[in-house]
Image (cartoon, rainbow, N blue to C red):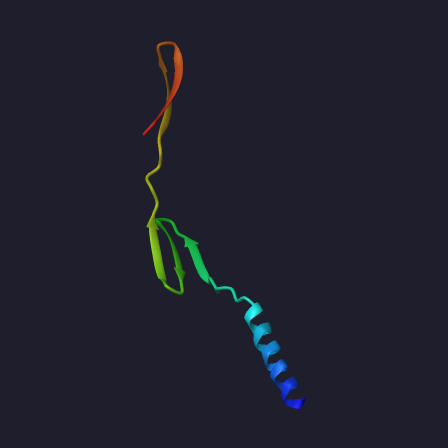
Length: 70
């Protein structure tokens, strides 16, 4: 009887640990600088350049106001 209780408790302990699901630790640090933005994490770093500023102006085409951006 004692060995049966020992085996049953071992099975319950094992099944209890299998139920618990662990999550990944996604630790990342991101910063935005004057010229570039970058992130650093456990698997490496990424640096991204900022795109050039978009210049938009409004023009009249055939009597309709149209916004043109470059």
